[in-house]
Length: 95
Image (tube, rainbow, N blue to C red; front, side, top):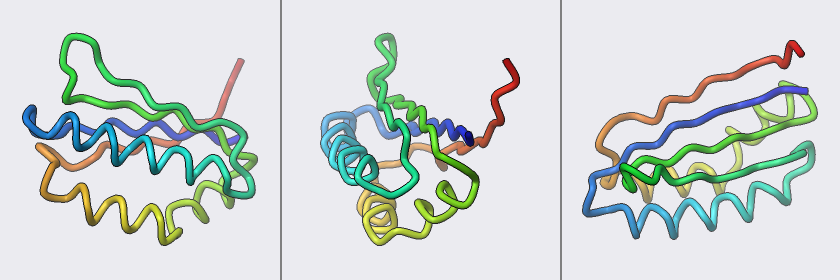
């Protein structure tokens, strides 16, 4: 298994628009081959901060996700909303 955590910080006034965009992205991503789980969280104390927790069958499936048209379109649409570049980290489960 391959895990990806992405922290997305948008401008505070863009939280609602980002939530809509990210919810659509999650629904599309869950349909991809190799997607085991794809969850979206919104920080309670800072609603302009989002976190995805993704589980992929392997690194190849996660890399294929990064090249999908729907992810590219979402990143392009979200660009003006970002307060900082997304932080995307990959993990291997140890225990």
